[in-house]
Image (cartoon, rainbow, N blue to C red; front, top):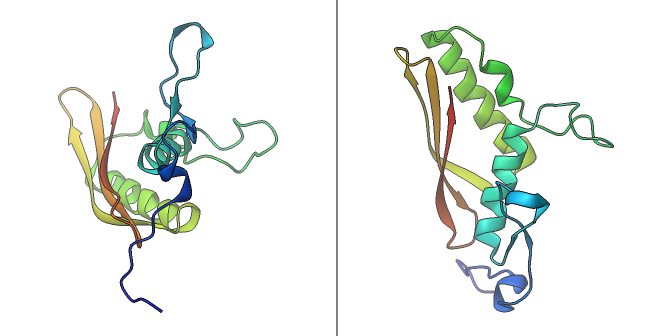
Length: 135
């Protein structure tokens, strides 16, 4: 058994096979496929956190529910709670995604909150950044 071996997803070896769809969707209801596991994981994270629980038919518990925080006051306690909430949901719903760094930044003058997530996928060479802005 090889130790420290990097896993390569089988779908990444077939460049013309779509794995998922890119978010945001294009105009006219056209779905643009993505062809790598890295793009698919990033789009899955975006989809999960921008979906409210109960919004998805047939799966009422799906969703990170970040939009529920839009009308909350921007305080240090709320920002810390949001950071903890995102981190816990990633651990539960995306066990292969390892959080490298998670920042919740507030621009109180603009009533804006930015979530910066630096992550890696365990046992792969996939590392990426996800930025979600709420205003």
